[in-house]
Image 1 (cartoon, rainbow, N blue to C red):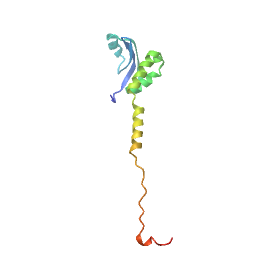
Image 2: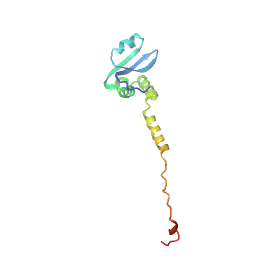
Image 3: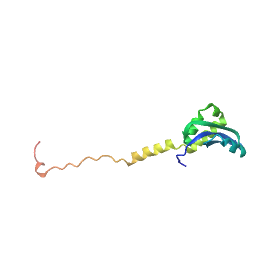
Image 4: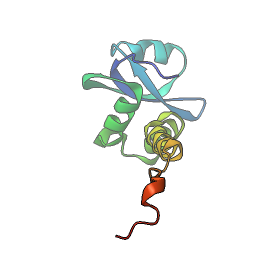
Length: 118
């Protein structure tokens, strides 16, 4: 699900007692969510267009979403979709595994100098 699609609106809503994070490009998304039976719809406009994980991290710090229900929904989303730290760890491990130790160069001694003194 790695895409580069950006959104300008993010928030949370509750449907059938389940609170989830929502993303949109227009605040009018509230109308569609309300028609579908969503309750406690809280959407905010973002400062700039953001990826979903960036938007989730941004709204996580806002006072509108500091209640336990919203924080749980945001944390659940980030735990499933924020793969950045894992990717960096895998790359570091892969680099460490593929590096080869340096070998000492072979030294050949000419036959006529084997018995020579220093």
